Image (cartoon, rainbow, N blue to C red; front, side):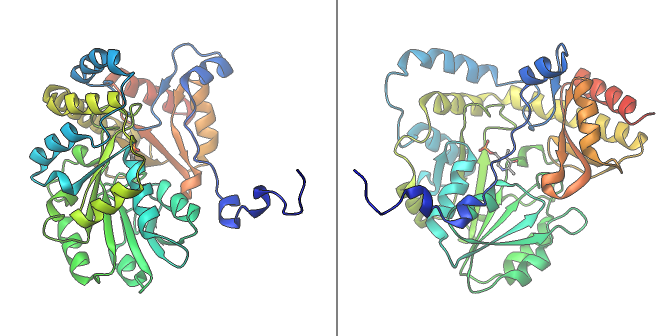
Length: 370
Ligand SMILES: *Cc1c(COP(=O)(O)O)cnc(C)c1O
């Protein structure tokens, strides 16, 4: 039937039209095909170089025969286990399809047109994108010497501020907030907002000075901590993360989530991974050693390297990184350029296995002409 009301397509708001899809890393197979390279390596998405926890793999294999069942919509066992590990109540935990899911819930519950969300630039790209998707206002504060500028963030707070996102340690710089600064920051903040500590990389932090959001949730109702199984636990493809927060906040997030947002294999894998201390220890050892190697090697190549508390390193290579990225692809090494983060002369390299790190440095030496 024809009418004169037009199409829903005509009504898509400007803030949706202006969204830019998240840039994916180049798939390995694509590099193989496009550049005719055998066995390229991917050091672009901050994945675990050792792969998934063997215990998780075994548990997932066993659980496959039950995938005709719907998952446990409440993530009962996973929440129980996390609550024991973190010393909080299961009612203070919400599990998501990756921690991205938690970011989405928080924004959908608390943000609507007229609300402001403060983030740093550069930091994780997902925050501003999701804020824009619901018509909220992004207030973006530049980093100060590659660190979150907590003082500037405090000054940017208005009566309309609802959420402050701090990825700590920060992606893509790898830098951490220091506890002393964070405590002073919290002290100066009003009560009408939440501070979201996105702790995707917290397991990799070597300094004792990194504040851990999960330690704060109980004493400060404004703090929300997000964690993920995607990085240190090596389960990025399964999509599972969680948030720890005041019970009343958790109740609201629970209302907006899909009933089966975390699939059964993800729940099973995450639960088993939490018991795989050996794999986590090995992961941290591998990453820390690789980090030291890469940092030193990059500095020897004349790059400025940011002190990283994560499993990746940001380097200022002093020239257009897009060219270097392309040349590195031809050498079979996938890294990340930082143009979309506003850092055109920087590359981000995920710490890989020792042989991958060496290969990356060899390629970079060649590409940088040294
Ligand atoms: C990788 C990453 C995440 C994790 O996202 P998942 O959805 O859990 O895979 C969250 N925040 C930051 C800053 C990240 O870099």
